[in-house]
Length: 427
Image 1 (cartoon, one colour):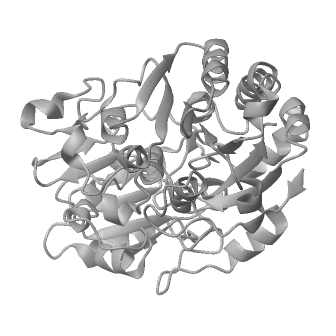
Image 2: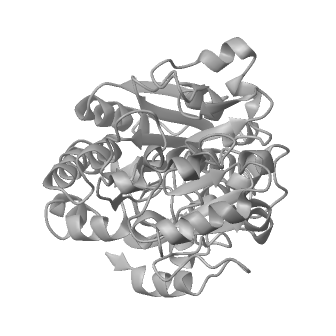
């Protein structure tokens, strides 16, 4: 396998968001050609649909590999850090490693925040989080007067009740201020398909991302790859884009830990079936016209459960805020009460020395931390007054329930920001 990781990491490590200090343990997003934000434009170009969103990937070897393709299969495995992918390929996921030997492997950065709602929206719009406005798991939506969960589209305090925002006039299909790639590809005569687990196929996030995309559901890994293979092997009467999303590694990593045997075996099991039932069973004629790409949206970081990071144990901090923080536990947005900003900053530094850096949200936005382009009309409101950047394994937990998480993401550490990209022609 052609390994581009060393040279690509060297390029990424030189990237800097001007005027923002993220800390020694951090990776700055490489929005100018080595980020997941650049993937949609490359897909559009490979399939002959012209530009879409921002600039394409700056990976000449990948462009050579994609030359003349009529079909692209993009597999997104949620929450696989670069270094874990490398470790697993060399051990338990050896079947995938062997199957990809005539392809290439490299790395990209996630977006900021390094979280699913922001990253997947970027991958379907080709736009930065600053532009599309999906800036974290929980956001204050001023237009609806509430803090909302951006996965379930419900008030954040009602964690299990999906879709309640629709009763307030929230329309997933019309919520984004930018366009999605499905209609763009359709105008060029390109089919778009998405494979999603049945538990999320009708979710609000899916409704937001997939206009003019044919959705397919699956229950298990076997029926997923059987049906992807059947679709890929159909005659290519038109060009075709196929998206496959798998969230099993993310789920197990959150609850048990990203460095556990559980996470590794979940990845191994998934990729073994991918190899056995898909990569090795594609019609060679069709395979020659098909590019397979595997990426992750972000990584995960192992954290310890520590009551010291729970805001309920810091009433003198909480009382200085107008409401609980929003965003991500690893990248929080604060709404201070009038005149309390300096006191909040002092509390952060005195209580958690070295764990957090707080910067004005407007500065973080306009410096480009959340990406290039014209910010969406509600973006600054959703970032509050201060953005809290975390260091090490720190986090802020503010939910009024037990903290169940071991693995976390959303921040700017290497483990959260560096993700793998593997690619090969299938014939």
